[in-house]
Length: 385
Image 1: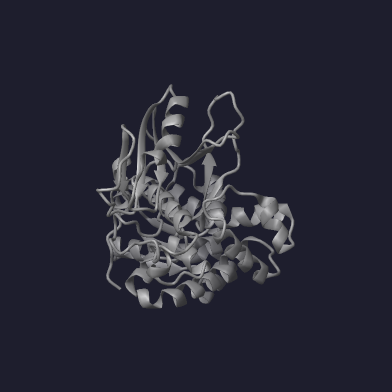
Image 2: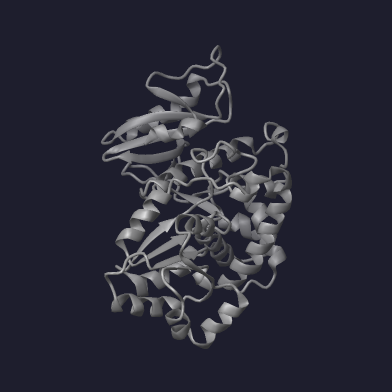
């Protein structure tokens, strides 16, 4: 598989020069290990999931680390989080040595607890997500951004089936005592059918026969393992009631399409999920752009009880909000921007930019927008920053 340069690699090299340890999190198969081994080819490598290594770690973690040459990549450390305590001890013996511990983990929340307790001030923490369109033109609504899918699109359906099985067996079982993985698998498909909607935990629990707290727990698992994006509502003192539930999207549109049974680009325009899938694709590209540039992940939605709804609200500069609508259409009309205009007036203490994002190739003859609203193809989404 041809290596695709990642936008994050500059940040990774800089962190390795300035910190004793680097911790790289992100979803499984996003390319964390490949990137680190490419950037640091002479570095030792230890896969903590390997049964022999796992056995050595359980038997004597201190000796395992002391006998491991450095610098070293410790891959999938969430399988032995206790190692972080010993890594901290070794760092404190020689704090001036930088870039000695390059650590990856696929489960962000459990790993971050270990970092907070053991590695504060000693480790730089970065996140690698699947490829963005900025990194590869092969990234699309149907394929998503996982490197292995993009390298062999004909096997995409098989890859996603295998990915789901691996994800269920490894990450889900290790994070929660889920006895019926079949029900959890149906939960994933149900979520895919709710893309772009505000989360209603009761309506998700009922068809599965599980409790609302169970749904909340499962949503948390999917979020911390990098499978879904929950877009929080943007709050302001508007003097009116706001919808407080987050909106749901999948981080990878290819996985969402697979769960919905969409396996061909020709099926997408005819699918009732075309619009929500495109919304999710836009959300994912915004989040990837923020993460790849070392920016805070700040992506919000807006909806009030009076029916005013805007897909995304993105802080793009101090005191500035970009109000964004995602439209999966080639024909843009002024009435599509009414919500943007109304929200811009409501958040008057901010400077606002109003943008409609579309797939590209708009029909110039039939496409017009209100004054002050910019039309932006998805390939140029970075221009909002």
